[in-house]
Image (cartoon, rainbow, N blue to C red; front, side, top):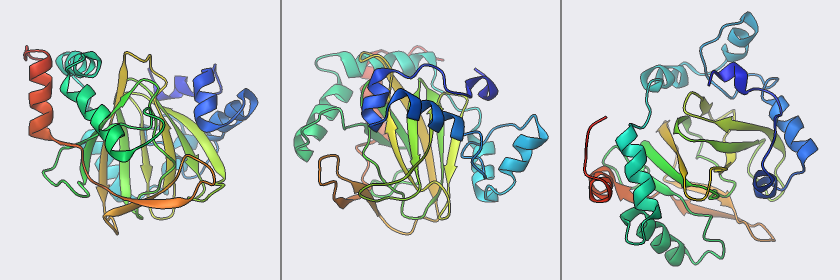
Length: 257
């Protein structure tokens, strides 16, 4: 779907409203706000002078990352293998999610997602594939003043942008990230967000992330439960690319793109 056809309010699933603690009217207003933020929180091929102007202040480093990743997507085999591994009782990705929830002691098992290192660096990998099972979400978190890129490669996630990380952060905009969309961040813009996957519970979404000029191996986040304290986590990947590839081939033998 073209980025321009994704704009506007549209129908917001009830689960999305719950995930971001908003009502339908606020959701519609926040989705409309995406079109009026400057610089644009989205990078895309501008077809109008207005769109070009809104992207003019996006850092050149982020634009370069966009150009290098704009054609990335999951192959049919990758989609099938990830879905199978997440939904099979003995699937490696399903076991990883369960282990991650048990290890963190979270009350909400849906507050987990999978961070795949695509670079060979377990802590603060600058290149990640993130897997979001349907209904799962992140906490509100920030990115240590990185310049970064978040590109959809399969399915859909909804992203709430915040002015900054705080106990009661101000909401800026609500955008949907699909396989043809790309958002960005810099020390001055869009550092804090929350991600939610509105896909069916037996499906998933995937996003590709690149970070550069990161100031710390530690990201801050807001705890989900009241009193919503600000805490920290080490940006550790859950699985290496080699382990991830093995998990996929164990789920569905490789048959090409």
